[in-house]
Image 1: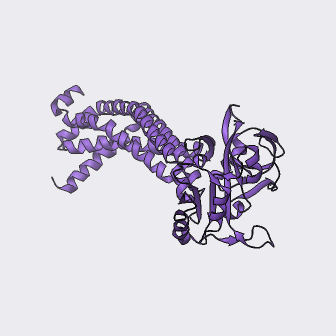
Image 2: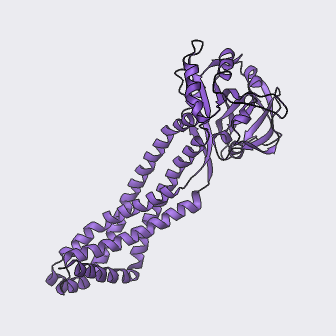
Image 3: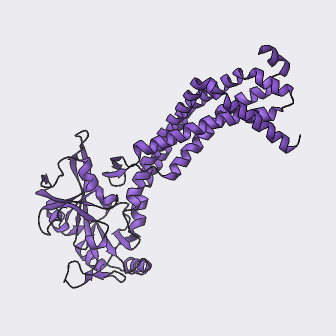
Length: 404
């Protein structure tokens, strides 16, 4: 048989199969709904990981360098004394700029302190670890993406805090004007800020020099963030610090550091998402098998007649598979669009295992996740249609005609 004739046979049988789907609408809709549910869950779960990863990877700039004590895996594990902080600020490659209008340029370097405080969640009232970051005046010039959304910024030397937009939405008692007791001090919330959805929105900021005595930290910090003259100045800056015998530090680009922070949770979420989808997908495959076996049974006479007229078994297999794939693709598209409509942009918070503090983020249903969902649905369709297709192709013509 020529390829053109075979394609014509496939087209004729497939078109007939598709036209008869309304006659089996109940089973067909059940299959579509089952696969849509699997895909919606898969995409929604994976969007958690994508949103978490996005919050961390957008936090850093390749032009910023992060300095920690050597061997530290996170800010919580690092410790840097005041003398070391000054050495970092004066290192070659650090950009200089005016912190306030009319002031002389200074090194754009911010020594920072990172502590976690208990704040109840809005949804449940259960306490959660929320980061409270002490910064120096250069911090706002180093991270220009920050913008005040309500109230004002805190005054240096006073017990005042700025609250990230994500933290304010997820936790209680952080509205402007609220007074809170942490450490040795009572704090007043004077404003809120946004940072384009980055990690900073999960935090509260205050003056590092005020935070130090509140937690009895003396003249110590945990990290130093420096704005470099350019991204290319990183190697010069790093070499100067790591070769200085007065220091015992490690230097990373800020973007790389925070990008690595979320890898553990992102990997866990992806593994759990696919495991859940596979378990649910088994049920969807059985549903598809039932639908396609019913379709083959309902078309027994039709298939036998076509075989008697000279249509090959391969054409029958392709037609049954095409019907199964069409139902699966419809379910996949429906589930993917449903996940995008209901979950994209949904805000929540979770624990960052690297800092044991809460990170607020938005579910991020990306185009890549939508494609993954539809591809997964097609795989389910292939699994659900394969055995019914083989059965249809192996039907003895004479027996099938008598059975019909």
